[in-house]
Length: 177
Image: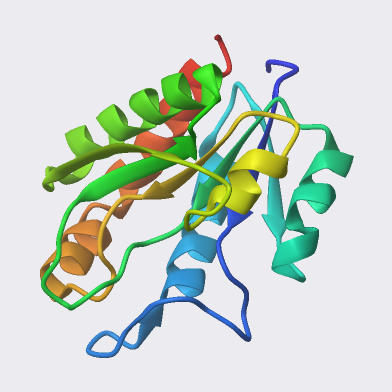
């Protein structure tokens, strides 16, 4: 086991669950909560700490107290029930964040085979930018698919084992940089 610590942040929270697929009655929080448990149970070479947020403004400090080596925040995109694809967000000034985003993006694309929406630099003002900027360790926000798109969600659900291993492979690779 490596001494590296990855903070795995479950996006949103139980009483504010993020995006929801109404046809599957599945929220972003519930999908990623289950996924995070799978990752934590199966990973062997990196220490994982799951992080559940209380208030968004407090999240960076809650993570910083844990002193992780790097951070991955689990999310799902949503827009208009038609948009599709995979993207990973990183802080625009973080070289390691960009490297982490590339590693994770490749793993997610290889698993899900959805449209490559690319890695996306974010500033403080952008969606997710607050978390990306104010954590001490490099951080990325994963958006592997659009949860409000029935096809994207069906692909993710059918490939949950592959998706789990895509995150594990990325976390293990990131722990070596």
